[in-house]
Length: 386
Image (cartoon, rainbow, N blue to C red; front, side, top):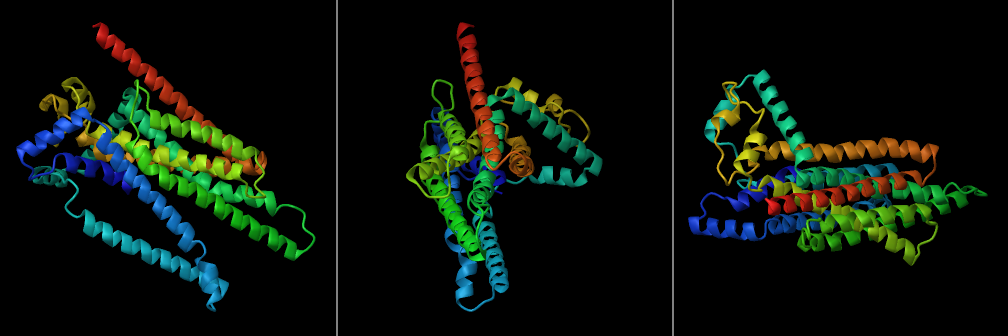
């Protein structure tokens, strides 16, 4: 939801109806001087409240079944009531979003709405596939968008690694030890539960603290994306070290490593959101605009780039929904890949395997950042030479 709404909110903030011409020009001038600052800061606040939600889940919902049992409920009833409470909370949040975001998102003009209703299913499907193809091509040809998609993949895989594989890793370290009796097994498993909760909590606490830092971090320096570089290096080092440590006891070194995992996770989330939002509102040349329109068709089946003459202030806003969809698809693909492949590797190779896989993901993203930075330097020098 956040990934789909954020580009529209940025668009609305930068070109809201009803603003005076002077105010709009001031915003445009500020955006030219600071092309990524607003998007990065907004993404930072999104990441901040994502961390707040994660800590809320750890502090409220996770211990809720045991607290309900203390007031007299059976374990089954306590667990069921916990799900009911979580579901009711989600409904309240949905209502709050509906009320708070009403009127904040841009809608299609009436003419486009009427045209869309008049299109056949085949025309709509063709237009959708053309838009997806265009966005995928832009992901390969525009480094900022491609990095945003890759960062989304790494961010969601990190979320799964922290929430799923850390508890599994701790359980395998403690509960699989030979035990003399049932009480010993219960003691080991309870200790594993406590340690896993503490590690997850520390990770999300550092994610919460570093979300606004990544939002205000200089977006790029010497053509390299510094926030994403820091996030990927933190993830690569953190996951490799975590796989090699003993988690049967809490130690300062272990807490430092899970802090690196939280920093890596929130850095990838904030930076990917910022990259995608910045690309949507990025001013493009008429040539780039025509290439982004290539393949799209209008209501009469005519190619849009033959009918549309973009101005020098053209953006990719007409593709923002498709961009957000591909961004979300990259994250969903990461969840599927890591849960399936990581689970198989966990069973067949050992409990450390999913963390090495996550380290490979982060290292791959780091290589992509370096390559894109090198391409930016090459293109800058080429333009300067011309």
